[in-house]
Length: 116
Image (tube, rainbow, N blue to C red):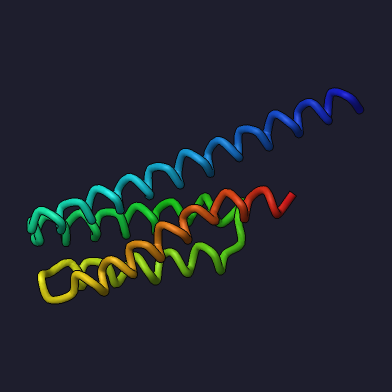
């Protein structure tokens, strides 16, 4: 029985580390893309946001086994709109949506620990 508990603890720790690393990577991608808009590099920012959205969709496949699906769906929905806001006319909207997705990414770890 004790061996199973140790194995379970090791698996859970590995899963927590995966969720944390994935959240950190997505967070860094969004922050980097947003920083490009602040220096008026809009085409590069749009591409970076598209790449971040793609990364989020790819990560959702594995994260869906560990966290609530609706949390991942909200992140993917928000990520999908970010490229269209990466232009000079929509800076305020982009700031709001980028902050929203960063908060949603932060909640991923809470979703995982709340499951167990």
